[in-house]
Length: 600
Image (cartoon, rainbow, N blue to C red; front, top):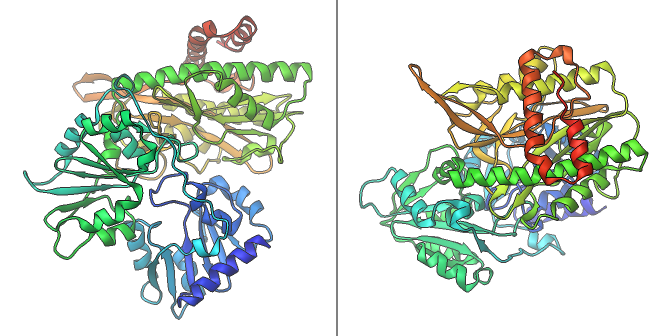
Protein backbone atom coordinates (compact mmCIF):
# COMPACT_ATOMS: atom_id res chain seq x y z
CA UNK A 1 0.00 0.00 0.00
CA UNK A 2 2.86 2.41 0.83
CA UNK A 3 4.47 1.94 -2.58
CA UNK A 4 1.14 2.35 -4.38
CA UNK A 5 0.43 5.60 -2.53
CA UNK A 6 3.94 6.90 -3.19
CA UNK A 7 3.75 6.11 -6.91
CA UNK A 8 0.31 7.64 -7.22
CA UNK A 9 1.51 10.78 -5.40
CA UNK A 10 4.33 11.13 -7.90
CA UNK A 11 1.98 10.58 -10.84
CA UNK A 12 -0.36 13.32 -9.60
CA UNK A 13 2.55 15.73 -9.10
CA UNK A 14 3.76 15.08 -12.64
CA UNK A 15 0.30 15.45 -14.13
CA UNK A 16 -0.13 18.82 -12.39
CA UNK A 17 2.99 20.03 -14.25
CA UNK A 18 1.96 18.61 -17.62
CA UNK A 19 4.55 15.82 -17.38
CA UNK A 20 3.97 12.18 -18.33
CA UNK A 21 6.80 10.21 -16.71
CA UNK A 22 9.87 10.55 -14.49
CA UNK A 23 13.22 8.78 -14.31
CA UNK A 24 14.54 8.40 -10.75
CA UNK A 25 18.19 7.34 -10.21
CA UNK A 26 19.85 6.13 -7.01
CA UNK A 27 22.41 8.90 -6.61
CA UNK A 28 22.56 12.30 -4.93
CA UNK A 29 23.98 15.53 -6.44
CA UNK A 30 27.53 14.28 -5.70
CA UNK A 31 27.15 11.07 -7.76
CA UNK A 32 28.64 8.77 -5.13
CA UNK A 33 27.74 5.15 -4.48
CA UNK A 34 26.01 5.78 -1.16
CA UNK A 35 23.55 8.52 -0.31
CA UNK A 36 21.94 9.95 2.77
CA UNK A 37 18.37 8.75 3.48
CA UNK A 38 17.14 12.12 2.19
CA UNK A 39 18.01 11.06 -1.35
CA UNK A 40 16.76 7.46 -1.19
CA UNK A 41 13.72 8.35 -3.27
CA UNK A 42 14.04 5.35 -5.59
CA UNK A 43 14.05 3.05 -2.56
CA UNK A 44 11.04 4.85 -1.03
CA UNK A 45 9.05 4.52 -4.23
CA UNK A 46 9.97 0.94 -5.15
CA UNK A 47 10.94 -0.89 -1.96
CA UNK A 48 14.17 -2.08 -3.65
CA UNK A 49 17.08 -1.47 -1.26
CA UNK A 50 20.06 -2.31 -3.51
CA UNK A 51 22.76 0.31 -3.97
CA UNK A 52 22.35 0.50 -7.76
CA UNK A 53 19.21 0.94 -9.83
CA UNK A 54 17.07 3.37 -11.78
CA UNK A 55 13.28 3.60 -11.61
CA UNK A 56 11.06 4.88 -14.41
CA UNK A 57 7.45 5.80 -13.59
CA UNK A 58 4.85 6.59 -16.23
CA UNK A 59 1.16 7.42 -15.88
CA UNK A 60 0.21 3.74 -15.66
CA UNK A 61 3.41 1.68 -15.47
CA UNK A 62 6.73 1.49 -13.66
CA UNK A 63 9.98 -0.43 -14.23
CA UNK A 64 13.28 -0.73 -12.38
CA UNK A 65 16.67 -1.37 -13.97
CA UNK A 66 19.49 -2.91 -11.93
CA UNK A 67 22.63 -4.95 -12.60
CA UNK A 68 23.44 -8.63 -12.10
CA UNK A 69 24.50 -8.17 -8.46
CA UNK A 70 20.88 -7.48 -7.54
CA UNK A 71 18.73 -9.55 -9.92
CA UNK A 72 17.58 -12.02 -7.27
CA UNK A 73 17.19 -9.42 -4.53
CA UNK A 74 15.22 -7.05 -6.76
CA UNK A 75 12.89 -9.80 -7.96
CA UNK A 76 12.01 -10.59 -4.36
CA UNK A 77 11.62 -6.99 -3.18
CA UNK A 78 9.51 -5.90 -6.16
CA UNK A 79 6.91 -8.66 -5.71
CA UNK A 80 3.41 -7.26 -5.57
CA UNK A 81 4.52 -3.73 -6.40
CA UNK A 82 3.47 -3.72 -10.05
CA UNK A 83 7.00 -2.56 -10.87
CA UNK A 84 8.62 -4.59 -13.63
CA UNK A 85 12.22 -5.74 -13.12
CA UNK A 86 14.58 -4.93 -15.98
CA UNK A 87 17.83 -6.93 -15.89
CA UNK A 88 20.47 -4.52 -17.17
CA UNK A 89 23.04 -6.01 -19.51
CA UNK A 90 20.97 -9.08 -20.31
CA UNK A 91 19.79 -9.97 -23.86
CA UNK A 92 16.41 -8.56 -24.83
CA UNK A 93 16.31 -6.13 -21.91
CA UNK A 94 15.25 -2.75 -23.30
CA UNK A 95 17.06 0.38 -22.20
CA UNK A 96 15.18 2.96 -20.15
CA UNK A 97 14.65 5.17 -23.16
CA UNK A 98 13.55 2.26 -25.38
CA UNK A 99 10.99 1.26 -22.78
CA UNK A 100 9.67 4.81 -22.36
CA UNK A 101 9.32 5.25 -26.11
CA UNK A 102 7.40 1.97 -26.30
CA UNK A 103 5.07 3.35 -23.62
CA UNK A 104 4.72 6.66 -25.49
CA UNK A 105 5.13 6.02 -29.22
CA UNK A 106 3.46 9.36 -29.95
CA UNK A 107 5.68 11.30 -27.59
CA UNK A 108 5.63 12.58 -24.00
CA UNK A 109 7.38 14.99 -21.62
CA UNK A 110 9.78 13.04 -19.41
CA UNK A 111 10.99 14.60 -16.15
CA UNK A 112 14.24 14.21 -14.23
CA UNK A 113 15.53 15.98 -11.13
CA UNK A 114 18.16 18.28 -12.64
CA UNK A 115 20.46 17.87 -9.62
CA UNK A 116 20.55 14.08 -9.89
CA UNK A 117 21.62 13.73 -13.52
CA UNK A 118 25.06 14.64 -14.74
CA UNK A 119 25.45 16.83 -17.78
CA UNK A 120 26.70 13.85 -19.80
CA UNK A 121 23.90 11.51 -18.73
CA UNK A 122 21.27 14.16 -19.33
CA UNK A 123 22.57 14.80 -22.85
CA UNK A 124 22.60 11.07 -23.58
CA UNK A 125 19.02 10.63 -22.39
CA UNK A 126 17.85 13.68 -24.29
CA UNK A 127 19.38 12.39 -27.51
CA UNK A 128 17.96 8.88 -27.09
CA UNK A 129 14.43 10.14 -26.39
CA UNK A 130 14.32 12.22 -29.55
CA UNK A 131 12.49 12.85 -31.76
CA UNK A 132 9.22 11.94 -30.06
CA UNK A 133 9.79 12.42 -26.32
CA UNK A 134 11.28 15.51 -24.70
CA UNK A 135 13.37 15.59 -21.51
CA UNK A 136 12.62 18.20 -18.86
CA UNK A 137 14.91 18.99 -15.92
CA UNK A 138 12.81 19.95 -12.90
CA UNK A 139 13.47 20.76 -9.26
CA UNK A 140 13.12 17.97 -6.70
CA UNK A 141 9.36 17.27 -6.36
CA UNK A 142 9.58 14.89 -3.42
CA UNK A 143 9.66 17.34 -0.53
CA UNK A 144 5.93 17.84 -1.13
CA UNK A 145 5.14 14.16 -1.81
CA UNK A 146 7.24 12.42 0.88
CA UNK A 147 5.71 13.71 4.11
CA UNK A 148 8.31 12.30 6.51
CA UNK A 149 11.32 12.67 4.24
CA UNK A 150 14.58 12.68 6.26
CA UNK A 151 16.52 15.94 6.44
CA UNK A 152 20.12 16.27 5.28
CA UNK A 153 22.53 15.50 8.10
CA UNK A 154 25.89 17.27 8.65
CA UNK A 155 28.44 15.94 11.14
CA UNK A 156 31.83 17.15 12.44
CA UNK A 157 34.71 17.22 9.94
CA UNK A 158 38.27 16.27 10.90
CA UNK A 159 41.66 16.68 9.24
CA UNK A 160 44.12 13.92 8.34
CA UNK A 161 47.65 14.48 9.60
CA UNK A 162 50.50 14.94 7.13
CA UNK A 163 52.05 11.64 8.24
CA UNK A 164 48.82 9.87 7.25
CA UNK A 165 48.25 11.53 3.87
CA UNK A 166 51.80 12.53 2.89
CA UNK A 167 50.91 15.61 0.85
CA UNK A 168 49.50 18.96 1.90
CA UNK A 169 46.47 20.53 0.29
CA UNK A 170 48.67 23.41 -0.86
CA UNK A 171 50.95 20.97 -2.67
CA UNK A 172 47.97 19.20 -4.23
CA UNK A 173 46.66 22.58 -5.36
CA UNK A 174 49.95 23.37 -7.12
CA UNK A 175 50.11 19.92 -8.70
CA UNK A 176 46.50 20.22 -9.86
CA UNK A 177 47.13 23.55 -11.59
CA UNK A 178 50.08 22.04 -13.45
CA UNK A 179 47.75 19.40 -14.90
CA UNK A 180 45.16 21.88 -16.22
CA UNK A 181 45.52 22.38 -19.94
CA UNK A 182 44.96 26.14 -19.90
CA UNK A 183 46.94 29.12 -21.13
CA UNK A 184 49.36 30.78 -18.73
CA UNK A 185 47.59 33.42 -16.67
CA UNK A 186 44.12 32.32 -17.79
CA UNK A 187 41.57 32.88 -15.03
CA UNK A 188 39.58 29.74 -14.29
CA UNK A 189 37.16 28.05 -11.93
CA UNK A 190 37.13 24.26 -11.69
CA UNK A 191 33.91 22.69 -10.40
CA UNK A 192 34.09 19.55 -8.27
CA UNK A 193 31.15 17.71 -6.70
CA UNK A 194 32.60 14.25 -5.85
CA UNK A 195 32.83 14.19 -2.06
CA UNK A 196 35.71 11.68 -2.00
CA UNK A 197 37.77 13.76 -4.44
CA UNK A 198 37.15 16.82 -2.28
CA UNK A 199 37.98 15.02 0.97
CA UNK A 200 41.24 13.75 -0.54
CA UNK A 201 42.17 17.15 -1.97
CA UNK A 202 41.51 19.00 1.30
CA UNK A 203 42.84 16.19 3.57
CA UNK A 204 39.57 16.03 5.50
CA UNK A 205 37.20 13.24 6.48
CA UNK A 206 33.67 13.12 7.86
CA UNK A 207 30.69 10.89 8.61
CA UNK A 208 27.89 12.42 6.56
CA UNK A 209 27.49 9.39 4.27
CA UNK A 210 27.01 5.82 5.48
CA UNK A 211 30.08 3.61 4.96
CA UNK A 212 31.98 6.51 3.34
CA UNK A 213 34.12 8.73 5.64
CA UNK A 214 33.08 11.89 3.84
CA UNK A 215 31.55 15.29 4.52
CA UNK A 216 28.89 16.50 2.10
CA UNK A 217 30.68 19.19 0.13
CA UNK A 218 31.42 20.96 -3.13
CA UNK A 219 34.72 22.51 -4.19
CA UNK A 220 35.52 25.34 -6.58
CA UNK A 221 39.22 25.68 -7.43
CA UNK A 222 40.43 28.99 -8.85
CA UNK A 223 43.84 30.41 -9.75
CA UNK A 224 44.53 31.65 -6.25
CA UNK A 225 42.44 29.55 -3.84
CA UNK A 226 40.20 26.56 -3.26
CA UNK A 227 36.65 27.22 -2.09
CA UNK A 228 35.10 24.50 0.07
CA UNK A 229 31.31 24.43 0.41
CA UNK A 230 30.45 22.50 3.59
CA UNK A 231 28.57 23.01 6.82
CA UNK A 232 30.55 25.74 8.66
CA UNK A 233 29.37 24.38 12.02
CA UNK A 234 31.06 21.06 11.22
CA UNK A 235 34.53 22.64 11.32
CA UNK A 236 36.19 23.54 14.60
CA UNK A 237 38.58 26.50 14.93
CA UNK A 238 41.71 24.38 14.48
CA UNK A 239 40.46 22.88 11.23
CA UNK A 240 39.34 26.27 9.95
CA UNK A 241 42.79 27.70 10.61
CA UNK A 242 44.47 24.69 8.98
CA UNK A 243 42.37 25.01 5.84
CA UNK A 244 42.96 28.75 5.65
CA UNK A 245 46.70 28.10 5.87
CA UNK A 246 46.37 25.70 2.93
CA UNK A 247 44.58 28.29 0.77
CA UNK A 248 41.08 26.88 1.34
CA UNK A 249 38.22 29.30 1.93
CA UNK A 250 35.09 27.81 3.55
CA UNK A 251 31.54 28.68 2.45
CA UNK A 252 28.14 27.38 3.50
CA UNK A 253 27.10 24.20 1.70
CA UNK A 254 23.80 25.78 0.69
CA UNK A 255 25.51 28.76 -0.96
CA UNK A 256 27.02 26.84 -3.89
CA UNK A 257 24.34 27.90 -6.37
CA UNK A 258 24.47 31.59 -5.49
CA UNK A 259 28.27 31.56 -5.80
CA UNK A 260 28.10 29.77 -9.16
CA UNK A 261 25.65 32.41 -10.36
CA UNK A 262 27.97 35.23 -9.25
CA UNK A 263 31.11 34.10 -11.10
CA UNK A 264 32.51 36.68 -13.48
CA UNK A 265 32.29 35.98 -17.21
CA UNK A 266 36.05 36.27 -17.70
CA UNK A 267 36.67 33.06 -15.73
CA UNK A 268 36.98 29.90 -17.84
CA UNK A 269 34.55 27.31 -16.49
CA UNK A 270 36.22 23.89 -16.27
CA UNK A 271 34.11 20.86 -15.43
CA UNK A 272 33.95 17.08 -15.74
CA UNK A 273 30.77 16.25 -17.64
CA UNK A 274 30.05 13.13 -15.58
CA UNK A 275 30.56 15.00 -12.33
CA UNK A 276 28.44 18.12 -12.70
CA UNK A 277 24.66 18.04 -12.51
CA UNK A 278 22.73 19.54 -15.37
CA UNK A 279 21.14 21.93 -12.85
CA UNK A 280 24.53 23.27 -11.74
CA UNK A 281 25.85 23.35 -15.29
CA UNK A 282 22.91 25.51 -16.31
CA UNK A 283 23.90 28.00 -13.58
CA UNK A 284 27.62 27.81 -14.35
CA UNK A 285 27.08 28.25 -18.08
CA UNK A 286 26.64 31.81 -19.29
CA UNK A 287 26.53 33.17 -22.81
CA UNK A 288 29.58 35.39 -22.27
CA UNK A 289 31.90 32.86 -20.63
CA UNK A 290 34.46 30.40 -21.96
CA UNK A 291 34.17 26.70 -21.06
CA UNK A 292 36.66 23.83 -21.00
CA UNK A 293 35.67 20.22 -20.36
CA UNK A 294 37.94 17.99 -18.28
CA UNK A 295 38.06 14.98 -20.62
CA UNK A 296 40.25 12.71 -18.47
CA UNK A 297 38.48 9.53 -17.37
CA UNK A 298 37.17 10.26 -13.88
CA UNK A 299 38.48 13.81 -13.81
CA UNK A 300 41.86 15.30 -12.92
CA UNK A 301 41.51 15.01 -9.14
CA UNK A 302 40.29 11.40 -9.31
CA UNK A 303 43.36 10.47 -11.32
CA UNK A 304 45.64 12.23 -8.84
CA UNK A 305 43.89 10.43 -5.98
CA UNK A 306 44.13 7.01 -7.65
CA UNK A 307 47.93 6.88 -7.48
CA UNK A 308 48.79 6.49 -3.80
CA UNK A 309 52.00 7.91 -2.36
CA UNK A 310 54.28 6.02 0.03
CA UNK A 311 52.49 7.34 3.15
CA UNK A 312 49.13 6.23 1.80
CA UNK A 313 50.44 2.81 0.78
CA UNK A 314 51.88 2.34 4.25
CA UNK A 315 48.44 3.20 5.65
CA UNK A 316 46.95 0.37 3.60
CA UNK A 317 49.57 -2.10 4.86
CA UNK A 318 48.83 -1.17 8.46
CA UNK A 319 45.06 -1.33 7.90
CA UNK A 320 45.24 -4.81 6.38
CA UNK A 321 47.41 -5.98 9.25
CA UNK A 322 44.79 -4.83 11.77
CA UNK A 323 41.99 -6.19 9.65
CA UNK A 324 43.78 -9.51 9.24
CA UNK A 325 43.86 -9.86 13.02
CA UNK A 326 40.10 -9.25 13.24
CA UNK A 327 39.44 -11.71 10.41
CA UNK A 328 41.51 -14.44 12.03
CA UNK A 329 39.80 -13.95 15.36
CA UNK A 330 36.40 -14.25 13.66
CA UNK A 331 37.37 -17.26 11.57
CA UNK A 332 38.81 -19.09 14.59
CA UNK A 333 35.56 -18.58 16.49
CA UNK A 334 33.53 -19.81 13.52
CA UNK A 335 35.71 -22.92 13.40
CA UNK A 336 35.27 -23.55 17.13
CA UNK A 337 31.50 -23.04 16.98
CA UNK A 338 31.04 -25.40 14.05
CA UNK A 339 33.25 -28.04 15.65
CA UNK A 340 31.43 -27.91 19.01
CA UNK A 341 27.90 -27.66 17.65
CA UNK A 342 27.30 -24.15 18.99
CA UNK A 343 24.47 -22.38 17.16
CA UNK A 344 25.91 -20.02 14.52
CA UNK A 345 24.04 -17.68 12.19
CA UNK A 346 24.85 -15.17 9.43
CA UNK A 347 23.77 -12.19 11.51
CA UNK A 348 25.82 -13.43 14.46
CA UNK A 349 28.94 -13.61 12.29
CA UNK A 350 28.25 -10.16 10.85
CA UNK A 351 27.92 -8.73 14.37
CA UNK A 352 31.10 -10.52 15.46
CA UNK A 353 33.12 -8.87 12.70
CA UNK A 354 31.97 -5.42 13.78
CA UNK A 355 32.48 -6.12 17.50
CA UNK A 356 36.01 -7.48 17.16
CA UNK A 357 37.08 -4.77 14.71
CA UNK A 358 35.76 -2.07 17.00
CA UNK A 359 38.13 -3.23 19.76
CA UNK A 360 40.89 -1.56 17.73
CA UNK A 361 41.06 2.12 18.71
CA UNK A 362 41.85 3.08 15.10
CA UNK A 363 38.65 1.48 13.79
CA UNK A 364 36.48 4.07 12.03
CA UNK A 365 33.55 1.98 10.86
CA UNK A 366 32.71 -0.55 8.18
CA UNK A 367 33.62 0.36 4.59
CA UNK A 368 30.42 -1.25 3.28
CA UNK A 369 27.59 -3.35 4.68
CA UNK A 370 29.13 -6.69 5.70
CA UNK A 371 28.07 -9.63 3.54
CA UNK A 372 27.76 -12.92 5.40
CA UNK A 373 25.93 -15.45 3.23
CA UNK A 374 25.49 -19.19 3.73
CA UNK A 375 24.39 -21.73 1.13
CA UNK A 376 22.06 -20.34 -1.51
CA UNK A 377 22.36 -16.84 -0.04
CA UNK A 378 25.95 -16.80 -1.30
CA UNK A 379 24.60 -16.73 -4.85
CA UNK A 380 23.46 -13.14 -4.14
CA UNK A 381 26.61 -11.06 -4.74
CA UNK A 382 25.38 -8.24 -2.48
CA UNK A 383 23.31 -10.24 -0.02
CA UNK A 384 22.23 -8.27 3.04
CA UNK A 385 21.53 -10.08 6.30
CA UNK A 386 19.60 -8.62 9.21
CA UNK A 387 18.15 -9.92 12.45
CA UNK A 388 14.86 -10.38 10.58
CA UNK A 389 16.13 -12.54 7.68
CA UNK A 390 18.88 -14.38 9.55
CA UNK A 391 19.92 -17.85 8.38
CA UNK A 392 21.42 -20.61 10.51
CA UNK A 393 24.84 -21.85 9.37
CA UNK A 394 24.36 -25.61 9.50
CA UNK A 395 24.62 -28.61 7.21
CA UNK A 396 26.82 -28.69 4.16
CA UNK A 397 27.72 -25.76 1.93
CA UNK A 398 29.80 -22.64 1.57
CA UNK A 399 29.89 -19.65 3.91
CA UNK A 400 30.81 -16.49 1.96
CA UNK A 401 32.01 -13.47 3.92
CA UNK A 402 32.83 -10.11 2.30
CA UNK A 403 33.64 -7.32 4.74
CA UNK A 404 35.91 -4.32 5.12
CA UNK A 405 36.62 -1.39 7.40
CA UNK A 406 38.07 2.10 7.65
CA UNK A 407 40.93 2.95 9.98
CA UNK A 408 41.38 6.54 11.12
CA UNK A 409 45.11 6.83 10.34
CA UNK A 410 44.29 6.37 6.66
CA UNK A 411 43.35 2.88 5.54
CA UNK A 412 40.38 1.13 3.92
CA UNK A 413 40.02 -2.64 3.58
CA UNK A 414 37.89 -5.06 1.57
CA UNK A 415 38.31 -8.85 1.84
CA UNK A 416 36.23 -11.85 0.80
CA UNK A 417 36.70 -15.42 1.93
CA UNK A 418 34.54 -18.46 1.18
CA UNK A 419 34.95 -21.36 3.58
CA UNK A 420 33.45 -24.87 3.57
CA UNK A 421 30.87 -25.90 6.15
CA UNK A 422 30.27 -29.63 6.50
CA UNK A 423 30.69 -31.92 3.50
CA UNK A 424 31.13 -30.53 -0.03
CA UNK A 425 30.62 -32.41 -3.29
CA UNK A 426 33.22 -32.67 -6.06
CA UNK A 427 31.58 -29.94 -8.15
CA UNK A 428 31.69 -27.45 -5.29
CA UNK A 429 35.36 -28.23 -4.67
CA UNK A 430 36.13 -27.92 -8.38
CA UNK A 431 34.61 -24.47 -8.68
CA UNK A 432 36.20 -23.29 -5.44
CA UNK A 433 39.56 -24.32 -6.86
CA UNK A 434 38.92 -22.64 -10.22
CA UNK A 435 37.97 -19.35 -8.54
CA UNK A 436 41.09 -19.57 -6.38
CA UNK A 437 43.26 -20.27 -9.45
CA UNK A 438 41.90 -17.13 -11.10
CA UNK A 439 42.70 -15.02 -8.04
CA UNK A 440 46.25 -16.41 -7.94
CA UNK A 441 46.75 -15.97 -11.68
CA UNK A 442 45.92 -12.26 -11.53
CA UNK A 443 47.94 -11.73 -8.32
CA UNK A 444 51.05 -13.16 -9.97
CA UNK A 445 50.70 -11.20 -13.22
CA UNK A 446 53.53 -9.21 -14.78
CA UNK A 447 52.63 -6.67 -17.43
CA UNK A 448 54.21 -3.77 -19.35
CA UNK A 449 53.60 -0.13 -18.56
CA UNK A 450 50.56 1.14 -20.44
CA UNK A 451 48.46 -1.98 -19.78
CA UNK A 452 44.72 -1.48 -19.34
CA UNK A 453 42.71 -3.50 -16.82
CA UNK A 454 40.59 -5.14 -19.50
CA UNK A 455 43.75 -6.77 -20.89
CA UNK A 456 44.29 -8.60 -17.58
CA UNK A 457 40.69 -9.60 -16.88
CA UNK A 458 40.95 -12.97 -18.65
CA UNK A 459 43.63 -14.03 -16.14
CA UNK A 460 40.97 -14.21 -13.43
CA UNK A 461 38.12 -15.54 -15.58
CA UNK A 462 39.84 -17.96 -17.92
CA UNK A 463 39.59 -21.08 -15.75
CA UNK A 464 35.84 -20.50 -15.34
CA UNK A 465 35.37 -19.79 -19.06
CA UNK A 466 36.89 -23.18 -19.78
CA UNK A 467 33.96 -24.71 -17.89
CA UNK A 468 31.37 -22.59 -19.71
CA UNK A 469 30.54 -20.46 -16.65
CA UNK A 470 31.20 -16.84 -15.68
CA UNK A 471 30.50 -14.04 -13.25
CA UNK A 472 29.00 -10.76 -14.46
CA UNK A 473 30.54 -8.20 -12.11
CA UNK A 474 33.98 -6.70 -12.53
CA UNK A 475 37.09 -8.48 -11.34
CA UNK A 476 38.66 -5.40 -9.74
CA UNK A 477 37.72 -1.96 -8.49
CA UNK A 478 39.93 0.76 -7.09
CA UNK A 479 39.96 1.36 -3.32
CA UNK A 480 40.34 4.69 -1.56
CA UNK A 481 42.79 5.65 1.18
CA UNK A 482 40.40 5.97 4.14
CA UNK A 483 37.85 6.92 1.50
CA UNK A 484 35.37 5.00 -0.65
CA UNK A 485 35.86 1.26 -0.91
CA UNK A 486 34.83 1.50 -4.58
CA UNK A 487 37.02 4.05 -6.32
CA UNK A 488 37.98 4.81 -9.90
CA UNK A 489 39.05 5.50 -12.47
CA UNK A 490 41.05 2.25 -12.74
CA UNK A 491 39.39 -1.16 -12.94
CA UNK A 492 39.88 -4.70 -14.20
CA UNK A 493 36.78 -5.93 -15.96
CA UNK A 494 35.57 -7.25 -19.31
CA UNK A 495 34.42 -3.83 -20.47
CA UNK A 496 36.98 -1.51 -21.99
CA UNK A 497 38.43 1.18 -19.73
CA UNK A 498 41.18 3.34 -21.27
CA UNK A 499 42.79 4.03 -17.88
CA UNK A 500 46.15 2.25 -17.63
CA UNK A 501 47.41 0.65 -14.42
CA UNK A 502 50.14 2.67 -12.70
CA UNK A 503 52.35 1.98 -9.68
CA UNK A 504 50.55 3.15 -6.55
CA UNK A 505 47.06 2.24 -7.73
CA UNK A 506 45.21 0.00 -5.28
CA UNK A 507 42.67 -2.51 -6.60
CA UNK A 508 40.65 -5.51 -5.51
CA UNK A 509 41.06 -8.99 -7.04
CA UNK A 510 37.78 -10.88 -6.68
CA UNK A 511 36.88 -13.62 -9.17
CA UNK A 512 33.71 -15.52 -8.30
CA UNK A 513 30.98 -17.89 -9.42
CA UNK A 514 27.29 -17.91 -8.48
CA UNK A 515 24.75 -20.66 -8.99
CA UNK A 516 21.31 -19.24 -8.28
CA UNK A 517 19.45 -21.12 -5.58
CA UNK A 518 22.52 -23.23 -4.73
CA UNK A 519 25.70 -21.47 -3.63
CA UNK A 520 28.24 -18.75 -4.41
CA UNK A 521 32.03 -18.57 -4.21
CA UNK A 522 34.10 -15.39 -4.14
CA UNK A 523 37.71 -14.95 -3.05
CA UNK A 524 39.08 -11.42 -2.79
CA UNK A 525 42.46 -9.97 -1.98
CA UNK A 526 43.51 -6.33 -2.36
CA UNK A 527 46.58 -5.49 -4.45
CA UNK A 528 48.75 -2.47 -5.19
CA UNK A 529 50.35 -1.99 -8.59
CA UNK A 530 54.14 -1.88 -8.17
CA UNK A 531 57.17 -1.40 -10.38
CA UNK A 532 59.03 -4.67 -11.06
CA UNK A 533 61.83 -4.06 -13.54
CA UNK A 534 63.11 -2.12 -16.53
CA UNK A 535 64.55 -3.95 -19.51
CA UNK A 536 64.98 -3.62 -23.24
CA UNK A 537 61.21 -3.79 -23.60
CA UNK A 538 60.59 -0.99 -21.12
CA UNK A 539 59.07 -0.91 -17.64
CA UNK A 540 57.18 -3.89 -16.27
CA UNK A 541 54.77 -3.85 -13.34
CA UNK A 542 53.26 -6.41 -10.99
CA UNK A 543 51.24 -6.50 -7.79
CA UNK A 544 51.87 -6.33 -4.06
CA UNK A 545 49.23 -8.19 -2.01
CA UNK A 546 47.97 -6.28 1.03
CA UNK A 547 45.39 -8.75 2.37
CA UNK A 548 46.50 -10.89 5.32
CA UNK A 549 43.71 -13.44 5.78
CA UNK A 550 44.42 -17.16 5.32
CA UNK A 551 43.08 -18.91 2.24
CA UNK A 552 40.96 -21.89 3.19
CA UNK A 553 42.54 -25.03 1.74
CA UNK A 554 39.93 -27.53 2.90
CA UNK A 555 37.82 -27.12 -0.26
CA UNK A 556 40.71 -27.34 -2.73
CA UNK A 557 40.97 -30.10 -5.36
CA UNK A 558 44.74 -30.23 -5.38
CA UNK A 559 44.93 -32.15 -8.67
CA UNK A 560 43.59 -29.03 -10.42
CA UNK A 561 46.49 -26.89 -9.18
CA UNK A 562 49.86 -26.46 -10.83
CA UNK A 563 53.05 -26.73 -8.77
CA UNK A 564 53.46 -22.96 -9.04
CA UNK A 565 49.94 -22.39 -7.68
CA UNK A 566 50.59 -24.73 -4.76
CA UNK A 567 53.79 -22.80 -3.96
CA UNK A 568 51.88 -19.51 -4.19
CA UNK A 569 49.19 -20.70 -1.74
CA UNK A 570 51.73 -22.07 0.72
CA UNK A 571 53.84 -18.93 0.47
CA UNK A 572 50.84 -16.66 0.97
CA UNK A 573 49.50 -18.57 3.98
CA UNK A 574 52.99 -18.70 5.47
CA UNK A 575 53.23 -14.91 5.20
CA UNK A 576 49.84 -14.54 6.88
CA UNK A 577 50.96 -16.71 9.80
CA UNK A 578 54.26 -14.89 10.18
CA UNK A 579 52.66 -11.42 10.29
CA UNK A 580 49.38 -12.13 12.11
CA UNK A 581 50.20 -14.85 14.65
CA UNK A 582 52.20 -12.57 17.01
CA UNK A 583 49.07 -10.43 17.42
CA UNK A 584 46.74 -13.32 18.40
CA UNK A 585 46.20 -15.13 21.67
CA UNK A 586 47.44 -18.72 22.08
CA UNK A 587 44.16 -20.36 21.05
CA UNK A 588 43.78 -18.18 17.96
CA UNK A 589 47.42 -18.66 17.05
CA UNK A 590 47.07 -22.44 17.16
CA UNK A 591 44.02 -22.26 14.91
CA UNK A 592 45.97 -20.10 12.44
CA UNK A 593 48.95 -22.50 12.52
CA UNK A 594 46.71 -25.38 11.48
CA UNK A 595 44.86 -23.27 8.92
CA UNK A 596 48.09 -22.27 7.19
CA UNK A 597 49.82 -25.65 7.08
CA UNK A 598 51.37 -26.19 3.63
CA UNK A 599 49.50 -28.31 1.10
CA UNK A 600 52.58 -28.94 -1.06
